Image (cartoon, helix red, strand yellow):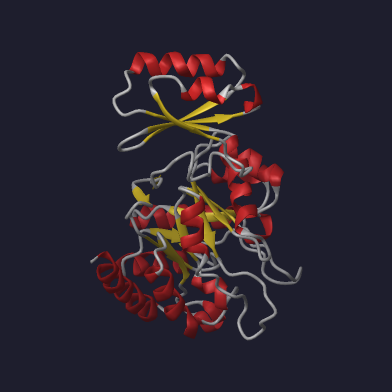
Length: 334
């Protein structure tokens, strides 16, 4: 349930109303918009007399929310959220370019990639230290050593870093990581999501391979219900009957999620198609449809990459994509 307060409601009256609602064992989520203040009521709202609440002088309207996700719901928070990742803002017109290798391979490699993607306009460096692989025989990442190398690249370039977590027990290793990524395979690892909800770090939450948008938002709700509201949603392609590409990029997820939720939405064109030649087109489509950013795999030597080289861009290719994305953003802003 949400209660929209009238503009200019005195702070004292607002506080009295909140105390009254909390006295009914309800949690009250306060959203201060440009024109209205919205109170989101979480809990057993059946005991709330809607007519009484709506009859209050300071209340403009009251609505029940049928969707099971509350904190991630656009109705609770009408304005777009802006997530701050160590000074880099994402959402509400703030566009982010996240780039880097699928896997951290060496100190020389990750620092070189960090320098090059920053020169091309990247705001955040990505790099995998723990890698979930379909085959147990594939490269699994450098793990803790990979995190240390990412931190060295951060020190060398000033770029905030994002890396994927696979186990809640690894959280101490991510203490200095600026944003934690939850991969597609862990989107419904609810125990992990609960632990991330107890942190205050931005969380990049990827949509599962065969999950609905509602299920993605319910996973975001797990994190937000724990107290951490710094969530960025990521569409990275879903599994369909099509086999020509690695996955099928659902660009309609961007406008759909923006109708359903206030959280920023970015797109991963690299995992969406699995072929580097298609990444530019997918990145342009993502930008044009209103995504709040891109996360793109970039490698210094894709042909010899230890992980996902086929979908990684070279430095020159990423530079071209970055420039074109800037041009597209100017066009759609007009």
